[in-house]
Amino acid sequence: MSILKKGSKSYSILNMKCPRCHDGDLFETGAFSFSKPFDMPSNCPKCSQKYFLEPGFYYGAMFISYILTGWFCLIFVGTLMLVFKVSWQISFVLLLLGIGVLFVWFFRISRAIWININVKYDKRTGEQVASPE
Image (cartoon, rainbow, N blue to C red; front, top):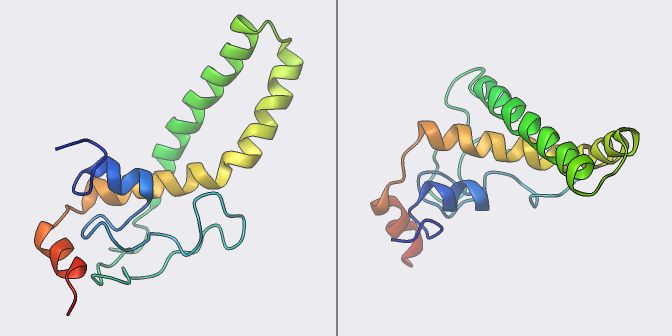
């Protein structure tokens, strides 16, 4: 089984799909949409998996977002300064612009990772959703 095919955690995370059926979308709009960037349906439209398992469920996603953003900043600025010999002032300005554009994606990918840590893929649910009734 490929790491990016349906049934793997990476498929669900990178495509921002329901962790249980891998068919329903986690967010109402596309991955880089600034229109309703934080809106999630309460349940999966395909298999009815609850996306908010308990109050404050996505609190842990903030830590994932912090780690991803921190590593991104270090690698981005380090690459600009060490490889491309850009001054630190320009590197940080470019970083602020980059973070401004990628903020929504970091938010969403962190939530996708967090829910995939807590909910397992159910092959039977995915097959039921895929088959016509």
